[in-house]
Image (cartoon, rainbow, N blue to C red):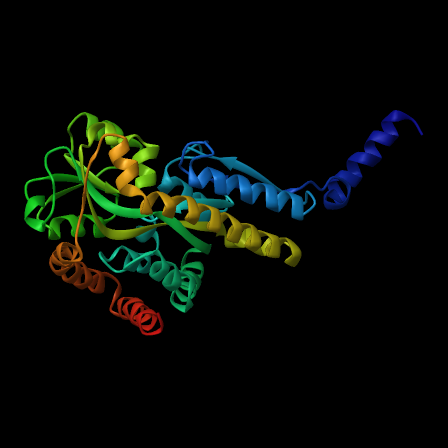
Length: 338
């Protein structure tokens, strides 16, 4: 057989039976937004996921990690996840609500007393029901929620111990109207600023303050331009582990099982690193030069009294009362049994 005939035969086989002759691994493009450093929870969790999945699928699934917004901002990544051009992303909560409105119930302020309560609610029946509704609506499968940090108010002007201290401050918020509603309900002026632009906005004095957890304050060195932090814990913020549902359904059952297990491992690592920083917030943040003000339960109650009713009513106007009632019912159920 001469070379020309051999080439033609191979070309025909390649066209007719590509999956048999030249099948390669299924590739997961995995996007997240933290720096590619092992002290960053998203990156540490992503590497654990990659190593677990590739080892346990024996190479049938390959994971390519794209940290530090390499595939675009959160809005771009969410669009890619819906369309399938990005297989997997770990996306912070702010941009998710505009895509799937019921997700905003997690941003109702002063919901959870501690991480144990928060994890119980998001991992339990309520969280599973919300995730399934999101899958049906958006085509994105939400496997899990990991901590994006307990959010506190920081600013460059003064110590905050009461809602009255918020008046006159211009506070950066994540894009998404619920975050603006939270800040305005406390008497401050909200200013939506995308995450990559936040350090410059603080440095240039475009905003006086912002609200984030310890992990993000450290990751972006926000403490360099924020002298004061009040540990009010207004929102338990989340990172959603999302995958394009069509891609997930294209996997074998064995591969799907590995993916789920890999996400569970990543979630535990992600939560552990973030919650450790949250718990040690006073020592960590004072160590980088911030003036840390812990708030008493009574002081937090004053913030809750002013902010929560206004935000709850606004959320009900946006999505109806069903999801709001369900999350409060889940919290009450937890309190009865713990």
